[in-house]
Length: 191
Ligand SMILES: [Zn+2]
View 1 (cartoon, protein in one colour):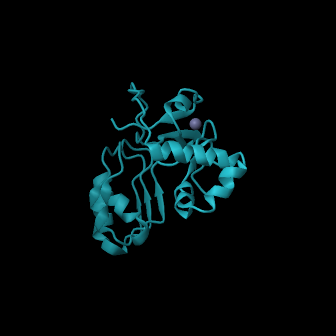
View 2 (tube, helix red, strand yellow):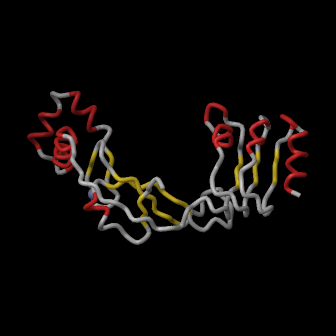
View 3 (tube, helix red, strand yellow):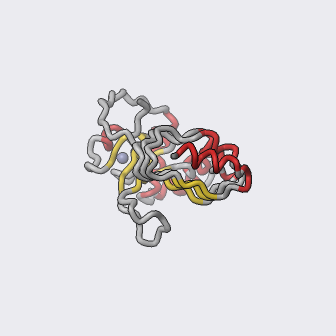
């Protein structure tokens, strides 16, 4: 059934605008979709697809934005399986240590540093790239732990109604903060 629908879509070539293959027990994203350069809407929800194929990533790249809508909920894209994380000793570079100190002092309005930083545009440039830790609120520049928090989508967002939670990227400054995270924050790991 899914094959027939896909063959029909492929026959349409670049004139095919919509492909709907929801609930078809598909286990792999059809890479042939890449050939449908005019594709605007792709609905693959409620299947058994474990990952997004690179061809679809290409279709959604900003420089080649053609796909306007992509539905993929109810697929096992997220591996809900805890893995044991190895805590590595963090050795921050001297620049990271100094940047964190300067940024946190500036946040406290340290008058000496506020005055000194005016004379060093290079330091301004480095600390302008600073990010804020989602746990302690302090700043860091180059070393962090990437996490996601699953939150209910805002009512103003234009997304599928059956999407209950969405992942938001959260950056954390250290393992010390990571160990104080709430139950809804998950570290991202390559498995
Ligand atoms: Zn922190």
